[in-house]
Image (tube, rainbow, N blue to C red; front, side):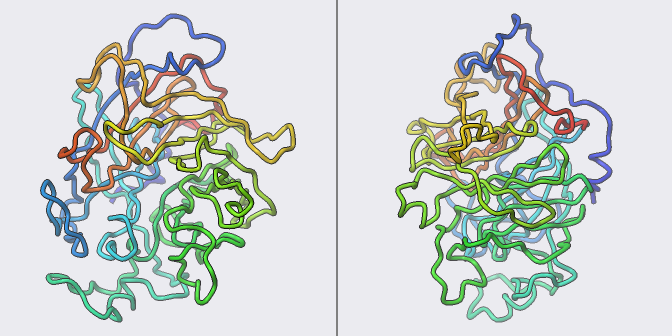
Amino acid sequence: MNKPGILIAAALMPIALVSTARAAAPTSPDPSDATLVGWSMLPTQTYVPGSASSGHWTTGNAAVPAPYPGQPVQGFSGTHALADGSYLVMSDNGFGAKANSADFELAVHRVRPAGETGVTSYEGLAFNLSDPDRHIPWPIWRDGGCTSAASLPAGYACPSRDRILTGWDFDPESMQIAADGTFWFGEEFGPYLLHTNDQGELLQPPVPTPGVMSPSNPTLGGATPNLANSKGYEGLAIAPNGRVLHPMLEGSTAEDKAAGLDADLRIYTVVSGVFENGFLRYRMESAANALGDFIMINGHQALVIERDNLQGSTAAFKRIYLVDLSDEDGDGYVEKTLLVDLMNVRNPDRLGGFGEVFTFPYVTIEDVEIVDAQTIAVMNDNNFPAVGGRGADVPDVNEYLEIRLAAPLKVDRRLLPSG
């Protein structure tokens, strides 16, 4: 098993996948000058070697029928760049819902993009998320949930009570590593924040969001949820000091919708696992859009992926914004400036076999990371075993992009891969 704590301590800078000559950058980033300088993909059917079969509650499709022969590495909803050029990537809850993901083991993996070959290599399971010390006060699938189920699909038997967490328990959608080497995950069923050690073992009970609950919250009881399913913490940014978190909802709350703020997403501040009072707001260009990811680049600026819910030939809005959390005008909203239009990226070297204008038409683009002050990495969640991003019958892969910006960002060195 790989040890993330050891990997992160490496002191080598990542090597750019592709280098091309450029003129001097302008004084501020111009979205039309964003350039694809690296491309790589992880094949759809990449499974953890020797892992248990999965997908027993799903039907799959003609391209990838269920059940699946192992645990798919599948779509990435969170990532962390390591100093040697590889990435930790976090898979989400599995197959899209609590009801169909009980046999998907929540995990963080290590992958390595390779621009020379265009194929991302899978370097192994970093860890599974688990709760060996029983911090979760309700039954989990692999300890009480399965044995109390009314029925099980053919070919599936309850696993041993090993306290490994599954997509029936949580839907993690974002990940950050704190200054002490522990991990924080933002998830959507609560929505909760999950705090683990560097082997994925919970260190404390799930941290609930004050005043916000989804229909999948296990403590809902007779309360009325005020956040739609799958609209929890798609984004989780961390300050350069590695101690302050900014979880960001993917959708608006019922209260905000009632107030006519259905395009507003809340950004909270969490210090030492405790939510501070109040929140900032990010206003989407359309209430029909969704958050893809949210990371800090310094003490007050961040990157946000905002996207529509379309794919393939119908995809139109996939953008990365530079946002400022300073709120200098005191209106409660972050300021946003378009940084990259992912449907219109220069590709002079025709990387990936695409044309001179590169488009990224996947429905869920959920990962952005800093490579260096002028280069960012972007990845999609391929919603295994979905099709449609690159063709109606083409199974979606996990694509990795490196995009060179027209001008450097003001990146705090502590947030670089070697920091």
